[in-house]
Image 1 (cartoon, rainbow, N blue to C red):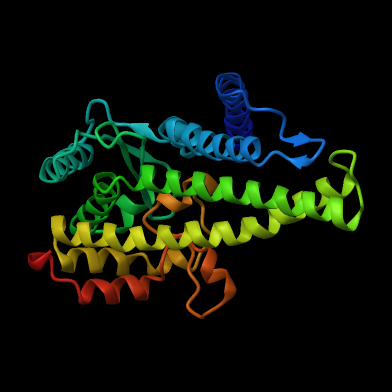
Image 2: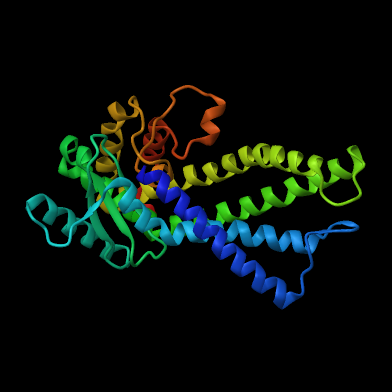
Length: 303
């Protein structure tokens, strides 16, 4: 129920901000209606799609840390209560200093699956959290490597990069779906009186079809940034520790992913398929075998 509420709240915020921004831009630039007597106004459509795509991504990014805490139940370590929490805070502080970013918040969330994530719109005010399952199943060296991987995401600005990419592809999907919808409505259905049923049905279908392509593009970038974060983990904690940490995740990948949908792209791992399938194009993470193989070829001293 909490996740549904957060999802609805985010989308409501997107719609409110979109309405305000688009109204301001329309008044400032004198934009007309998207649909006119001669068909689509491409300028107005382009602005509408760009605003909606980017506003959606930016709102999600700005709310990411707040939503992550609530959707995962992450408890931020304000004052370490035991040696483990003190070690987590000290390790993150050392790694953050090494890559010259501000000290992130450090948290723990209750989840039997060994996992971790980093999020936040500002690399100097990020959140790094690990699951209770990760602390119970991994050695300190492996946990150190996982933390270094997450610090790598923060230092590389991956959250902002992925949000920008998501916003751009969302805008393109919305734009071209409505162009195709207008074409079908006017040419196939011979409708000259503004958008009709052909426009709306075709636009929805194209939103879905182009959405699959957009997701594949975003997930390709997501997989690339996982390799970069692994390299940062190897650089900060040591290549052998990073490889050992990834190898320790193998048992967990055979079980259903327990991370909330909106956090899967920011986690250290996700459910993996060992064989090729179309679904691999839509995975946020490369296979563990691919990640380990890449690390074996990586030399931190030459980076």
